[in-house]
Image (cartoon, rainbow, N blue to C red; front, side, top):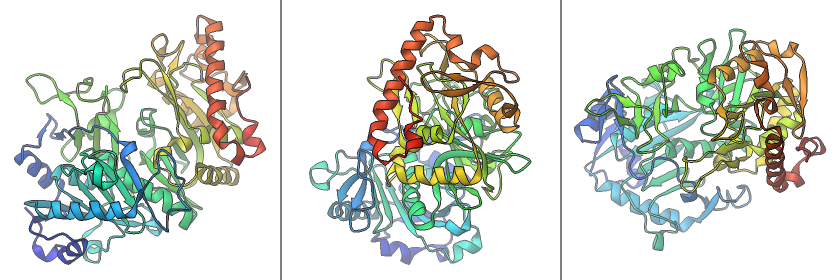
Length: 534
């Protein structure tokens, strides 16, 4: 049931160019959105009552189809590259008009007012327009939710217009394919068409904040998760998809600030979002209880398969995609912090899934090494995760989030370095990937060991142990940690063939050095000295 028309932002939607021939469903509850999805044959409930849907052709982001409008605001400020692709403003107008005409002919639309940034000093109001109810449920889960009083005077700073079934024409619309995501800083709008993958909405707003906050507010925007201990000690976890950001920050002994996107201002770390977007592949109650139990009524589960003849999810299935996901509000995590604003970080963890088996499970970084690793943003793709990847493939993503950073990586790196120096933060490099050999030979480091190492760093245990130096990368490796076999701490010890380890370490180091060449001219002596020595 739609909210009474007195609450409809009808005039504001008319300003968008929508003809309003549609039935506008405004600010519906999760229960209503789930039921509408079921009634339209677009989803089904699993055995715990969560809504399960299929996002269609796209089960992940399409970075080569994401564009930023080239205009007076962006031409000299955006770092134009393979991730920040320019599109002429005329094509924004062409697609905007086509989308408005398309949506104006729909029988119904879903509209949601929400916002980003838990710290009200940086709040960004967002109005989302969707053509499917489940897409609107995702917006409810991931963005922050205004109360009734705030809705009465709500004015959007930005709009997201999302139409998965709308197709662009590459020959006339300035895009590569039928799908696209276009950000216009002049019009304060994100257009998403041709893709039902919900993550395009959240990453669109993240891109916007990564542009606005560092430039206008002197706030470092970060692709990270964060939590806080009982002594108000904040921990920040940087990492690309699949490295463990969400899993490792969901710690029952600590309050969760958020799992993916945060800002760091002069006195605190705050969540950009109102929910979590967790990977589901191989999810178990034993390994990830908080995420497992968040799959309940109100959660939106994407692209999973069921055990035959049942509505029980087979979390091991990759039949549709390995990138199975669940979104849910932050309060579904039993120990979530509300409001999601913590103090200053005491520990920073750079998470990497090293499929080469070279890097140690944990090492302590100097400030120069921290900056070098941050700018490098190393992890690895493994065989089977992408078409054409038949062996481990190193991936370097600046600041652990290059696809979402409109500014030059040096801008974020400089801000992080200054904050680390001012606040005397401990910085750790954590390998959540392989040991005892590369992918296919060695074994994935046990999650229980990674948790134990992080706990030891957080509680100060690793401040009171001896360290040994790891050659080539010159990393400081602890020689002991409670609940972790000592032989696991130095990766070379876990390889049967030491010569093979040495060769692989040299190869990985050379990849680091080659990748960093593009940042060398803008890096200081301390950072350059932190490069691996081959």
